[in-house]
Length: 192
Image 1 (cartoon, rainbow, N blue to C red):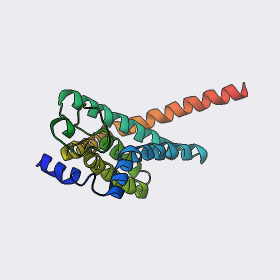
Image 2 (cartoon, rainbow, N blue to C red; image 1 turned 180 degrees about the horizontal axis):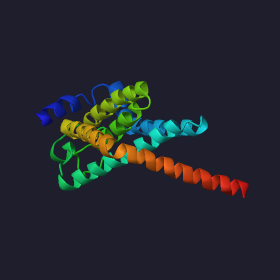
Image 3 (cartoon, helix red, strand yellow; image 1 turned 90 degrees about the vertical axis):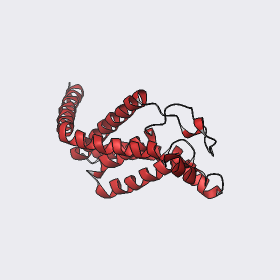
Image 4 (cartoon, one colour; image 1 turned 135 degrees about the vertical axis):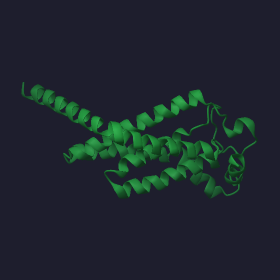
């Protein structure tokens, strides 16, 4: 069924020029937009002196790194070829033939969406939808099977539960201490 759904989505690639451009843009550029939004969130926290926004951006960054680290570990333990290694597919963009499961793009974008959801629900929901579009685009361009993307999303949701139950508070406290330390050093440097 995984391959059948893949052929259904990837089979459309190369047939509609505008859709090809949109899907290639989703694969290549939308993840960069996610990173810029997260950086912008932190920057807004600095500019508006909003410590909650800074803490949430930092916590989201930690959550993204944790999710991607888990993805890396899974990719090392469970190796699954990408679709273009085993099958003739409509490849719209080149890619190295490394492990396909789970999708890093799906994990990275969904992690940022889930992290931002806590501080800005409407932005988080928009990013959630865009993350799903990124996942579909990874199948469309021939880089992933549907289960690679779905598995990535499941990893993010499981990591979210563990993170918020066991690590979230510690990360926030650690950030507050680091920020206080840095601000104290900066004040001493400027006054001294």
